[in-house]
Length: 143
Length: 235
Image (tube, rainbow over all chains, first blue to last red; front, side):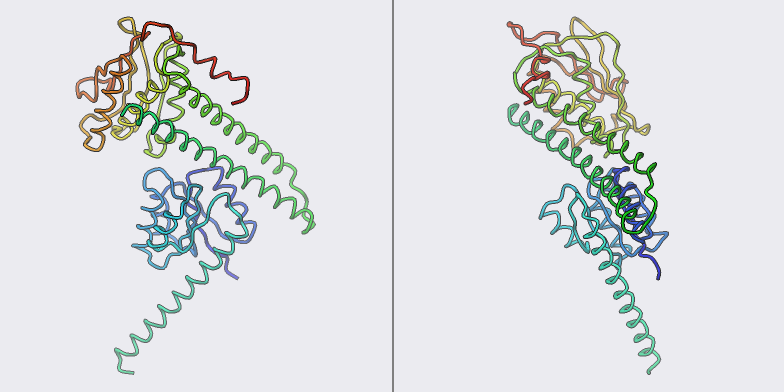
């Protein structure tokens, strides 16, 4: 079985390194970066099942990063994981297209459930897209 | 207006430092979680307990606790700086405190914040909270207009019977329309503290922002800030 590929984006180095180690121990393939700009660059080079994104970061903040990522990768499943979340932030993130919103401190089991759901959603979107493309080809050929 | 802005500063900084403490707690949460994972694997999967890894994690948790303690001490000192409108304080210590609080905004702005202080200790008598607010605003202005070196420095020197606080590393040609209000307020605040803004982003002055303060203000001597800092009742 192919491992879920996850990108963690958080500027708190010790936090993200430790979380990555815990997620790898649970069978996930995990990369991490410390800024929104690095996240944008990494997602452009590699496909991920989910991106777990912090809000307050140097340079491009979490909301800007979310907008940028979804503008260029509309199927990307982004989960916001933040220590300074409010209901207003969660609503704003959801309106922008975030898949989910979690508060720190992290409950790793809950995060794993969200990541698996994100992967399932991504696969479903990919299947729907493929089906639509096939249908389009068939229609253009008059079948 | 001064009172309102002072309260905003107090509240804003307290909230920002709470966020820093939250970062520490979240990191400890993950480290303790990882220790739990290692123990679980040893108990339920018959894996050897990685004692070295556990010892390493213990040290990392300890380092985070020390980091948290440093933040809590800074918040405590900062909170007590509002106890009295006028006090005698060590300039270097208070500037170190401001630089500590400005570290997060500096990181977010991707600017290295450095301090370059003389060895000599200088006592100043003024409003500790107002003084910190003035220096913090000066740093904020500089951080928002950091030049291509991306390094802002904070320093001070004795001058004309008082002190001058210098902030360097900002680009005076950067668009500052967003901070015009801050610049106006800084002049107003420094004046209220009995000081003067000597330079504020002048293109021909390498000390981009210079704030001058007298060593003493008012007629009656203020009480030392250290009495509030070394609070023995744990408040």
